[in-house]
Amino acid sequence: MKHWFLQPSMEDRFYICGGWQIFNRACDLAGGTREVELLTYRHREAGHRFLDDVPRSELAAGIVWVYWSSHVRELAERLAACPRVVLYAMNEDYGRHFGQITPPRWPIVALSRFIAAHYALKDPWRLIHYLPPALHPAAVNHHGPRDLDVLIHVRKTTPYVRNELIPALERRLATRVLRDWVPQEEFLALLNRSRTYIYWVHRQIQSLWIHEGFGMQPLEAIVCGATPVANAYGGLSDYLEAPYNCRKIGVHSLEYDLLQIERSAREHGGGNPDEERLRHYYGEELFARRFEAVERDLQLYFDSCPSTPPQAFDIEPARPPMHRRPYVWLHRTVRRAYKELRGIRPR
Image (cartoon, rainbow, N blue to C red):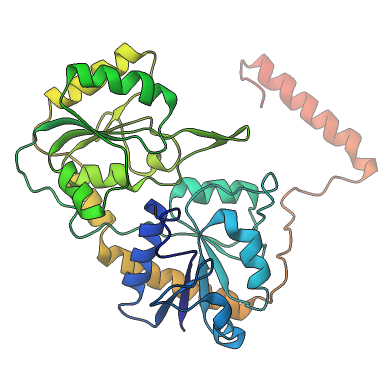
């Protein structure tokens, strides 16, 4: 079965981000052993077909993968005739506040356990799978000299980091601040020169707290031998374990954060204790095995289930009939009194 991966654009810099790279890499890895095609749906660009130019019968014969949660409503309308659509969820559901309600017939393939738990709490009857990303082959520790104490990218950081933390670090440590998008190979080379990498994401959008869905850069920092220094919210908790493989900041005060960063830079021994394990866990081989398992289950789901909303399963026991309720109440009251008498806290 063919897989269609939908990107809004391959050239517009507005869309180029970590999720954009992860989605392209998933497309490339999946295409190594199966038929895969990447389509664009916001801009017509050379080298890729446009979504509206592909016959719907051709699309309907395969599995369509989308990942921009803010484009869900638009794509749901344009893909209404396609029975096999999957959301590769890389962040939290924007939901009713933004009018981006994922159709109930779409399965969710989550990039992180945090995102899978988020969707499971909101929609427990939906098919949800877990498919973490694969690291770039160049993400390795070269064991070379590290002339940078601190590396930090200001994209998506908070005013506290930009206005307080960075100026204080620049006065105390050898700090490199990235303010523009950096190609991945160049970024990995900088991580191999750095002892610590600061990554803070905690954004507020229209009174809603939107946490990071995964965070590829701290993971790359670990496998390149650096120590991530992060607030460890959201999907970062999938692999960050302070103080084993990272340092936790955003704790108590600026001085405490500076102390954590200075200690991490001073005590850095040339590598990260978790780099080998995470390089294997997020390696290409395991990604291929996970994708194959997810693909088989998605085919079973689409072949077995009609394109109708799933049913809501009854999980609460039926209430007892009216003539039994006094006895049920008496039993519970006696049981609670017995536990209090024995010193057992009632449930």
